Image (cartoon, rainbow, N blue to C red):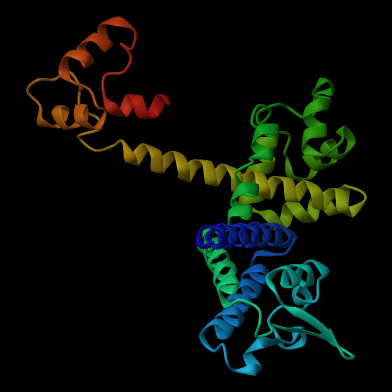
Amino acid sequence: MIQDTNQTAKGIDKYLHQSTIDFLSHLESYQTESRELFLDSLIKLLDNIITNPYVDKYRLIDPDYQSEPIIYKQAFLAGFFKRVGFIEERNGKQIFYYPYNAPIPALITVQTVLRDFGKVTGIKGDIIDIREMTSFENFLKLRNILAEDLLKKECKPERIAIGLNLDELRAIFAEINVRTAQQLLIMYKHNPEELESTLVRIVSPKRRAEHVIKTLKEFWNELEYLRTTAFYIFSCFADKISSSFLNDTNDNNSQISRRVCFFGLNSRINLMTVSFSQYSSSADFGQNK
């Protein structure tokens, strides 16, 4: 009987965990700041019930008096609250109540999942924002056409990628002497106001000009992200241990580096002579992965 009870408890816990994950997926469409304010508010509300289980006022949740009330009034939240054990009362307005016969451990399970989600998706590292930022859509689209002369008739695919036609580029060139994607990017970085003014005046309708500016902005941000990442990776292998020769028997740094790579000296020498002669140090392995 005890075993059946434990299995039931585990089943409920798994159900609540999955229900919370499903609920969190609905928040992806909201801006990072709104999402974080809402989650912080919800965690505190649950904590009030958990730590004050016999105080009636903490068991009531009025959406109108919460941070981000718009989210609190969404149907997906009402459905989630009901799965957790809340009762929805509508006496002229929407209020959620956690009854005394509903289990407090259920709230603890939900709160734990929410807090773990908050740790992963904090203000400085929102998982959704990172996923969007590291898709590098514009970099992949434009990296091979930076130096192409967009005024050449045969460069129509390149012009489409930027979002401009030949007549527009000719007019832009006449005003600010720009004819490549690279020059547009540099112009955006050093004089965005002049570039935006020129594009809005020449490109019609206005939303197309705004799209070009948005593309250049996102492309520049992606390049900065990649540059910073590359610098960090390079720095990781700039120390004496990483750059030491792995087959040097007289260098203490080489010995430490072999241990880091889980190589003995003999296996390292064999690797060098058989198929990995280009890798002379652990830094070479890191840079070629």
